[in-house]
Image (cartoon, rainbow, N blue to C red; front, side, top):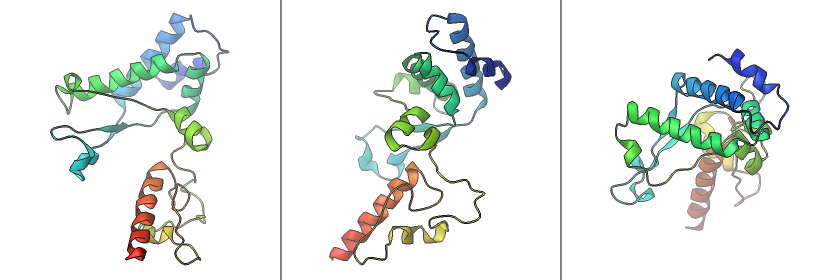
Length: 190
């Protein structure tokens, strides 16, 4: 199902929680979208075995998702149902492709959407990154070789961290700069 098939849904006026035809059309679109999309998969325990109990691991499975679609789904009151639907679809795809048998080994799972990111971070439209890559001047350090310097400030022994101290900005960089700043604090203490 192409994007043109979902566009009429984006123009509907909620609430239509009982409209099963509309909901099924959205699910059909999401099924096709997942089947034809790529996932980014992170396995943090590969770098630090203390991040999971022995013999276990965790996966972070990410893919791009349209904010307007998430917003419209929420307006219709379907957010939790669609999150469950997408989680199960991801598990099915992983089980049928690169991780056979994973569906029987999952002990816990959770998911978030662009709405979750918007709610927790205040980022417009739930974006994980804040500046366009086409900006002529970046308002923060943007050279990958200088990422460690992004935590420095003009004040001695004061460091900064967060999603806006390096470009591309976003949630992943907030974790990285937090670690870099903490390392500099620890180093300064010794």
